[in-house]
Image (cartoon, rainbow, N blue to C red; front, side, top):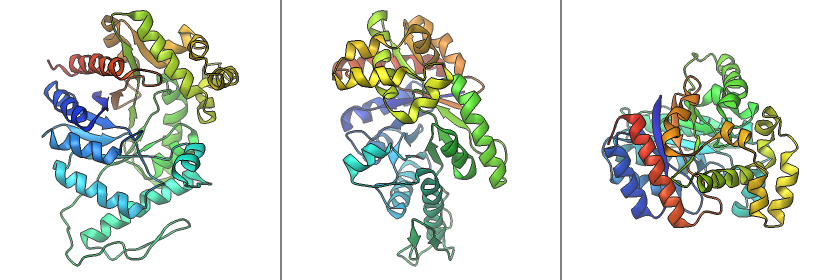
Amino acid sequence: MRVGLAIGGSLREVAALAGRAEAAGLESVWLAELDHSAFVQAAAAICATSRIGVGTAVALAFPRSPTITAMTAWDLDEMSGDRFMLGLGPQVKRIMEARFSVRVEKPAPQMREYVQAVRTIWAANRGDSVVHEGETYKITMPTFHGQPRPERRDTPILLAAVGPVLSRVCGEVADGLLGHPLASPRYLREAVAPAIAVGLERSGRPGGACPITAMPMVSIGDDEVAARRAARLQIAFYATTPSYKPILALHDRAALPRDLRRAFVNGDTDRMADLIDDELLDAIAIAGRPDEAFDRLRAWEGVAERVVLGVPWYGMPADRQRDAIEAALNLGARCSGGN
């Protein structure tokens, strides 16, 4: 099982963390798209390293045209020497509309077509005579130059997925699935992996064509109570979103979002954290003392090809988040046999 690290902060901090992760022997670093462009952060990480994989987890697909995404991914792949991995996600409907002014009615079919369109553009840039004409995207001039680049590879595409529909799409068209931090090993094994298998069968692809990258939440430190509370609060924040109800239902917590949303609307973060009991916390997160974390990480073996260690961020001051990333980096170094 390969081990990566989710990193963030200023571009200077991203570059420094990527360099340290590479020196520590980790397999990859991954950049999210919250307040900064995932692609610009990826460029900073690439420029600070020479061997480690660099991926987006995730870059938002639908606010960008497939052509822009295809060009950007190939630029980053060239810059990195074929180390870049394009992680794409649909984001939830409310944020798509409220933040990006983008309406998406059928995210799973649109994501399938988006990936197909990106690959069409790459094929055209290699010299193939192809166009993409789908329901959402019609790209009849996929390239703008006459000099083909036949040596260029398709950058690996990983899709973020939670439910069975998008997991099936991953199996049909993606090079991997990015799990959500709320997704427990049990959920990945019982709900996500079977859906991927259906997608692989539908598309006639081999069984190992779409491995899972899990993104376990890691919140460890000498103050065990504080570390566990940070993870509780992050789980509580995620669980207010309807998209993640299947995960909670699998763990017999289907009624939890109602109380969490009430506490969230009231700004009662203490109540939000208190609603996440120890059993649910330990099913989803690696939270508590650092000396227990290595053994806890083994729960993802067998279900995930790669784990990307991420840390809580909701309600966390910047200095505490930096400490959390530091602790996760140390765990990743231990798992990878680095310093």
